[in-house]
Each structure stands twice: as C-alpha cells, then as structure tokens.
Length: 189
Picture 1: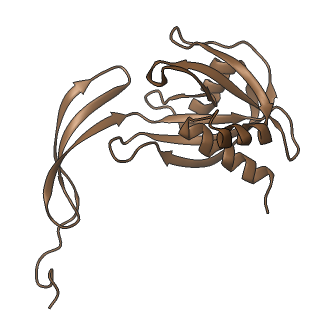
Picture 2: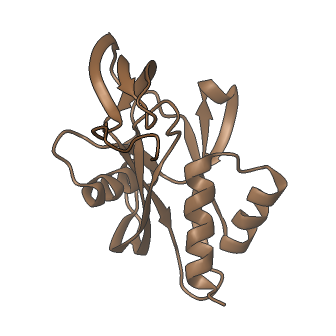
C-alpha cells in the first residue's frame, strides 16, 4: 500500500492570502500555501500586473540591427542594456503593451509584431510574467518617455548583442532570453 493510498489527494496551492503592501508597481502578499506533500507554509509573494518586452529589428537578414536601450536602473546601481519593455496597463493586451512601449521608449512603430514566448521573471517569489515579442518593419517617430525613464538608444547587430550577453555586458534576464530567441529564429540550424 502506497503512502497516499486510501487518502484523498490534496491539491497544492494557496489557502489564504493577506496583502501587506500595495504600491504603484507591485503589491506584496503573505500567502498560506499547501505544498505538494500536503504540508502547509507561508510564502511572501510579490504581485505584478505583468509586462511586455520587444526586440526591435531595424533591418532583415541573418544579422539584423537591433535597437537596445541603455537605461539607468536604480536597483542595478547603474545603467543596464535592455530591450524596450514595460508594465501592462489594466485591460491592455500584451501585443498592445509591446507596441506602446516600443513607441514610448524608442519612437519607433512596427509593421509587424511576432510573439516569441512568455516567461516568469522569478517564480520563487513573484507572479510577474513578461510577454516577449519581435518587432519588424520599423518606422521612426517621436518617443514619449516617462519622467523616471533615463535612457538612450543603442543600436547593434543581433550577433553583437548575443556577444554582449556572453561577455556580461547584457545582464537583464528578459533581454537575454528575448535576444537569444530572436537570434535562433534568424539563424535556425
């Protein structure tokens, strides 16, 4: 007879939740959770509305130019190379968010947007998911940056961006994943 034979299966998941902080970007909950073995515990969870990020490709071919942004990030204590990204507004689709963030941060609009994947940023303590896209057929325009966005455009070849991941110059996870997926899409083997 196995350990759980004859006992009702307990479904892992949240039993209760208490909001301990609500902010402009995140909220923090303390959840009582049932684990897969039936035991109970408390977990602190950062709640986030989700985001979209986009790899803007300026031209075609196997090594297109990609528009990175070099942005000041307080949490990283300096500047970080990233792809344009931002939070989903209430009721906004991931595609609309990606297009909006591309325009706001770079001034570009795109003729086409291709979904790469959706990732959890850090599933050990947050429910934040980022939807990753590639934008092609870019048309330049005016950016509409927020007051706390300090960034400059940094166009490089996709192969150079991948080299920047390898060298540690690109340390942002969403940017690394999106650039590597875009590189693989451009260079299938």
